[in-house]
Image (cartoon, rainbow, N blue to C red):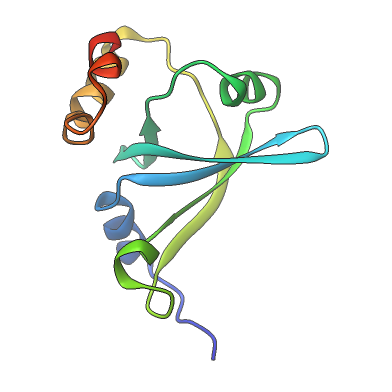
Length: 119
């Protein structure tokens, strides 16, 4: 039985109330998939990550696919998800970084002390 499609307001609500997005990067002929903590802000997903494979891949080819879902909370049969594609951008603007980090404070409470210190 096909699932009902979500209307924009439902997608907005789901994106506003979750904190993990799965992001897929292309690495030549392979796909590299990772989870990232995020906030939904100004119609975009914003997250914080350390430099590594994902940032190298994004610099070479910023097109990504993503998924945010409720499966961990609702189980296999009642989940909802928002999937899409877009561009992975690294933010250099200090004010924008502070705004995103402020929004991520609730996620940071469970972060390792090393990460909190670096941020």
